[in-house]
Amino acid sequence: MMRLEPRTAPSPLLTYGAPVLAAVISLLLAAIPLLAAGVNVFEAYGVMISGALGSQFALTEVVARATPLILTGLAAAVAFRAKLFNIGAEGQLYIGALAAVAIGSGRFDGPAPLMILGICIAGAVAGALMMLGPTVLKVKLGADEVVTTLLLNFIVALFVQMMIEGPMKDPMSMGWPQSEPILDSATLPKLIDKTRVHAGLIVAILAAIGTEIMMRRTVPGFRIRAVGASPAAARFAGMSVTKTMLLVGALSGAFAGLAGVGEVAGLKGYLTNDLSPGYGYAGIVVAMLAGLSPIGVIAAAFFVAAVFVGADSMSRAMTVSSYIANLIVALGLLSVLLSGVLTRYRIRWSLPARGRVS
Image 1: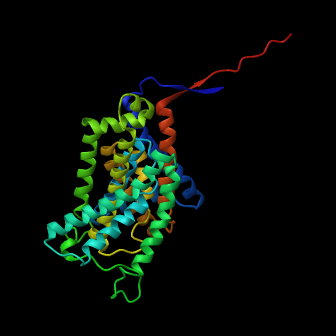
Image 2: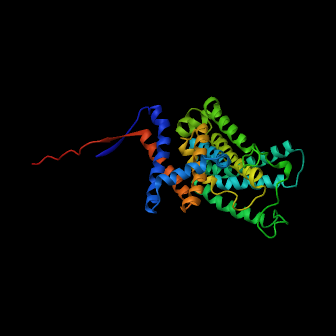
Image 3: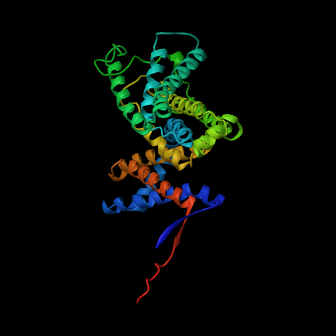
């Protein structure tokens, strides 16, 4: 008979090694469909690694894709640490991008530093407001934030579609549904010429470092961890659970909104309904792989970005579906959830007791 016995204090090796092991297991499990398709697994993964790390272009592409993943990973990590399960980072990303376009496409103009600061603030505030609604519903009415944030993704998608086909449509787009372009003064500068790496990377890394310091060294960070561990105990200790949850919701939404600002002002230059290939959802995997650690989010984001970039190369070179990247990410999430259980509990086996024979 198998039973789970809680661990009193998991070792550091187990705590930090579990996400790495989960990533390795996800790659091993993904080899099964590759074998079923008649593909040489070693060759496929060799092409995948080379496609992600084998050239300057590949490396810069990994960095470009990791930038929004760091921010959406932070959005999930901060919220999940307080047991606020934000599944709406995708919608918050789009609403942040929409706010950036509203400010930076010509309705206002000024010096570049002021414009860039303005669109970043607009995107962060828009994302924060988008998350505050589900947070208030949770703390005041007990509404399930998983449902409300998930449904808001679809509402935002329809709203963005309406805006880029209506009031914010670019008259020069030849009928294509896209917004007016961001002004040059509001465009995030490139960190490396002739690549897609932009200043949003600095914002993302600073956000991760700042969040780590806040969570470990400040009173609000302690309150967030306390509320996540036990809301009842935190309330008994005199902490305002409602205020803490509102802070968490605002931070989470702001990070996702900044991811949208980076994508529209650092890469594309205008908003379309396919701006994000699912960065909001992938951010959940990033946060879980990082063990909800803000600093760990950086490494996890680069891993997931490398999987996406490498899978694209593998798809082109070996006629393998690029959806293998989504499979690896999904398996990574399942593996890290299992590793989380094994980190908190140890498995005990015992033989069933035999009944007496009269």
